[in-house]
Image 1 (cartoon, helix red, strand yellow):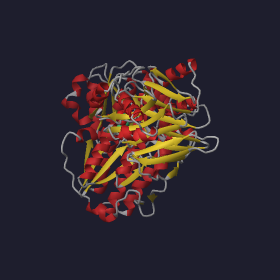
Image 2: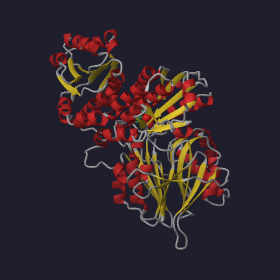
Image 3: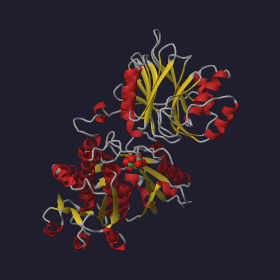
Image 4: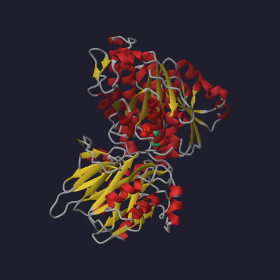
Length: 616
Ligand code: G6P
C-alpha cells in the first residue's frame, strides 16, 4: 500500500512528483503530500483525501525547487488525516514511507524518553526521528544516517528521505516494499512502481531488499548519479533494465474510467500473454520461463495454488484446468488462511503463487513458507521483477500492461490465460494430453480475443441491464463447475465498486441456504453457458423462477429454454468449453462497472480498497 515518488533534476519537482503520484494513486488514496527542497530548506504540503486535494493545496501554496519526495497513503497506523499524511518531518529530515515499522511502539517510547515530540500517530514518523537522531549524533551525511536508522527498525519499508543540509540528495531504501529507480535525462527519479516514472524514462533499476541508494541531482559540474549499497555500506551493482511499457499505457485513452478501458483491453492482454509461448504444431507450450524441466514436471505429486482476491478466483479455475488437463491433484488456498496453519509442503509439490501486483503480503508470505519447506514455486504475476516472481524458482508473467483500476479485470483474464498455459504444459509433459488435444486446447485459447471483442460489442445491452440493478441492495450470483469461480468474481466486482451486497454461490448449494432469500425483489445472476453443467444450471433457474426471483442469465446463443425463463439474457458465443470462463466474466465486469458508474461512484478508486495490499 502507499505510493512513493522522488525527483532530483533540473525541473520544478512538485508537478512531476504529483504526476507520478497520480499514477500510483491506486496504491492508496486517503491522503497525500510532498516535501520540496528549494535550496535553502524543506517545505511540505499535505492534504487529506484524494490527490486532487493535494493539487488544490499546492495551487494555493506552490512549492519551488528541483528536489523532492511525495507520497499517497493508505492508512495502516493512524486514521487518514492531514497530520498522519506523509511526508513526516523530524528536525532536519523529511521522510515518506510505504510499509510497516513493526517495532515502532518500543522505538516511540525510547525516542520520547530522549525528548522527541510527535505530530502524528504513524509508525513512519518514528523512522524520521531515528534518521534525525543519527544526524545529530554525528552521522557524516544523510546516506549514513539513513543506514544507521534502518539498522534499528524491523518490518517492511520503502522510503525516500530528504535533509535540510543536502539540497541535492534523496536517500531511498527498500526492504519488503518495492522501489524502482529511473535514470532520466539529467534527472534521477525513484518510485514505487514503473508507471510513476514512465513519462520520464524507461531506463530503470529494480532495487533489492536491503538496498540503500543515494540519488544526486545534476550540478553545474556533474551529471545525476545513483550509488547503491547495503545497509552495512557495501557497494552493490544492480542491472539497468529497459522497460517496454509505454507512458500512454497508463492513460485513460478516451475512456471515462481506467476500469472500462481495461475491460476493453482484455483481447490485447490475452493475446500478449500468449505471444511466443505456444507451439501449435506440437500442441505444446514453450516452458522455459516456467522453470520446470519435463523431469521435474513428471515428478510433481501435488499442485498448491495460493492467491488473494480476484487472483484467488483465477486460481480456482486453475485448479479445474490442472486437474482435468494434467491429472495432478490441486489444492487452492487463500494466502491469508495459509498463514493461520502449519500447512505441509513437500519437495514434490509445485506451489503456484498468483498475484497481479506480485506484492500481496499474504501471497508472498505463503510462497516464502512453501519455498522454505522445500516446494518449488512458480509465480504468475503482472508486475515485472516484483517480490513474488523474484522469490520464485520460475515465473510466467501475464502481459496485461499496467492495471490502474483497483478492481482487477484484464489481469484476471490474463491470469486465466497463464493458468491454462501451465495446465496444458503440465498435461503435455506428463503425457496426460497428446499433441492433438494440446493443439485443440491452445487453438481455443487463441480464439478468445475474438470472442471477447464480440461480447464487448454488446456492452450497451449490459448497460441497460445495469439500470435495473442500480437500486438492488442484494444480488446473488450462481454458477456450477467452471462457472462457479466466475459467479464469485462477478459478485466480488459488484460489491467492490457498487457497494451492493453481492454473494457468489455454487449453484448446487442454493438449496442449502440461499434459496431462503429468493423472492421477487432479489436479482439472481446465473452463469449458465451450454457446457457439461448446463442442464443442472437450468434446473436452478427454474427453482429461482418458481419463487419469483428475477433472473439475469448468461447463456449460449440459441438457448430457447433460457430465453423463456430469464428477465434479461446476455448471449454468449458458442465457444469451446474450457475457455468459457474467459468470456463469461466479461459481461459481469461490465455489469458491475455500469451499476457503479450509474450510482456515481469512484469506480477506479472504490472506498477503503487499495490495489496492492502489502499488509497482513
Ligand atoms: C486487492 C485488489 C484486488 C486483488 C487483490 C489481490 O484486494 O483490490 O483487485 O485481486 O488485492 O491482489 P494481487 O495483486 O495479489 O492479485
